[in-house]
Image 1 (cartoon, rainbow, N blue to C red):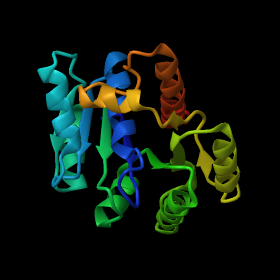
Image 2 (cartoon, one colour; image 1 turned 30 degrees about the horizontal axis):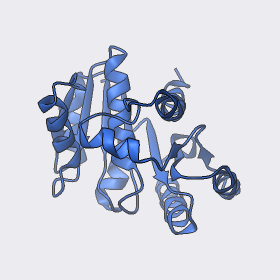
Image 3 (cartoon, one colour; image 1 turned 90 degrees about the horizontal axis):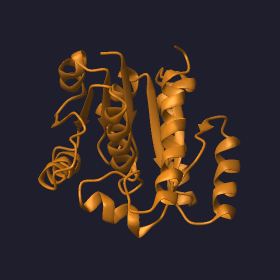
Length: 211
């Protein structure tokens, strides 16, 4: 296995699984062998999303499986170019284990303080427990206006953590695409696909920048 990327959060509904699926999709299209590990065994949203994708006869995105533990996912993913860990929608012991195993940890968060504060709190906790700060980045999701994007970027910037280029807007087309087993880069609208792709490119760039 060459690289591990973990998508983690303090709470649900902040776009963690959305980004994990999109990275799996784009990495698979680029020719990489991909394992997407769904650690939320109660919900199993990534697994169900992939079933829907295959049912609708879209190209699979590699292997998508549910795992109880990060260590199981890491062992299973050893033969893949990229292991993507879709963490639980809450902080846990597994959250730290995932971040410690990953080459890059992405913390998605919305633009409100209700989401930014928990996201940065998790970033600080991971850093305090030994995860290198350069391996932790935040991604803005479900944003609506340039003003709130600018405000959120300034707020994150004061923390010293990196906020990724690009963002994911709050658009019904993104939800509709995912309902069909597609990624946010596979909507019917090229402009939305390009906007989502900018964020994904930033994620992959950070993942490989030390190579």
